[in-house]
Length: 109
Length: 114
Image 1 (cartoon, one colour):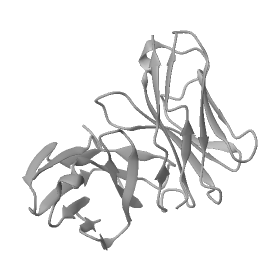
Image 2 (tube, rainbow over the protein chains, first blue to last red):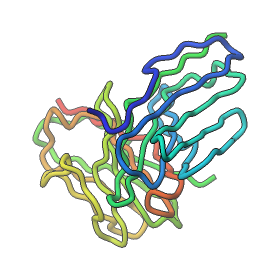
Image 3 (cartoon, each protein chain N blue to C red):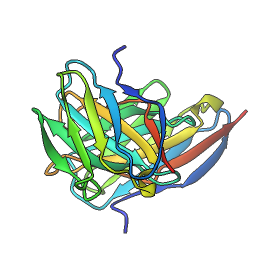
């Protein structure tokens, strides 16, 4: 079983829709990262969370440590948001990230 | 804005050849990482590096792999004798703080082993 599970695997939305991507993990963590991987392959860090909620522009990330769950929300989605969104957790006792398989988002105009 | 740079962007090599992938992390960062992503699969951790030594490595990072920071700016990943299954995108990343700080990734180096 994967230690980091994302849902959905694929998501198609119409421009302007509100989007939610979910991440569940089964290990104790000290931080959770949301990353965006562009079609060309490059990876950009969106958020690092250890508790609560963060907002940046149209992106909002939340984490519930007790439930071992995080969500990434995109408001007023736009075709340029089309990318793979990856959840990755840092366990603290070990110096590495465990990655989810990613959610491929396609936003249609 | 500071960025992590990686070279080459794409390398094609013959099986058994040595490959060196280079990375220039952000200058004030202290923690450096290599990850790889085989086509169609998830990103996997290879190794983390701090204070001029490996701090953590995965099962993937066997004796064929090595890392070094030869001159205080470059951070290299060497694959001694490449295998077909080493074909992947290799990402370098750096951060100010281990795990609890924002990670900055390079654009990746695509390695194709023939």
